[in-house]
Length: 239
Image 1 (cartoon, one colour):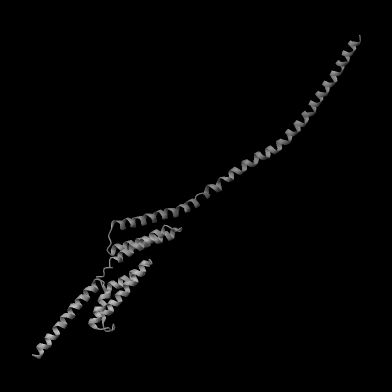
Image 2 (cartoon, one colour):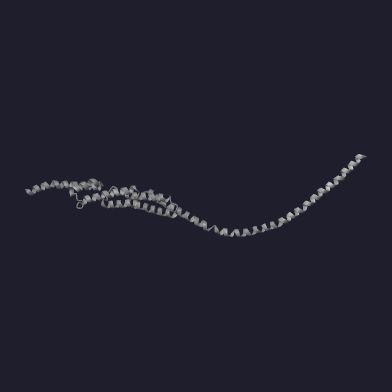
């Protein structure tokens, strides 16, 4: 009779503990770590070193806060590290889809940052990083057409930057070949006509100086011929 009484006393307690344990496990899977923590603590004690269930809830709460804060500050690598640690504790955490989303967010960040760079090498490095992160997001579970389009855009930008990098190399090597050969023949013929003009010019100056005195003599002869005509006119008036 005593055994029956003891069993009757402990059965409600066991059923109560089981229902509370099941409810705490359900809360933990739903990532409601705060409520689950207090249920585990009431069931298995307040000492976290001995109560592994409450300790697991406490660790999950810390990791959740850390990865959310890191994501808000765009520290995607560290945020994904914390989220992976959280998923090891609770694979059913509803934050699991955020892991590939953060890879896509980080890839978009590097793709935009690459367009603001001046160095072709830096642009290509950032685009390579963006492509790797887009592919990582795909392997983590996000398979959308927009991600494929973003990868193609990064690859196209890399090809364009590669072409622009080769253009100045070709233009810098090709022009010197005609520049060295063309000026040599043009200098020699230009020097000869300049010397001929200098020798001819003094002769022309001498010819002009010789013709000037002849014109002066002609003017003098005209003045001498006019004087006798005036004298003849005066003689005729006296008679």
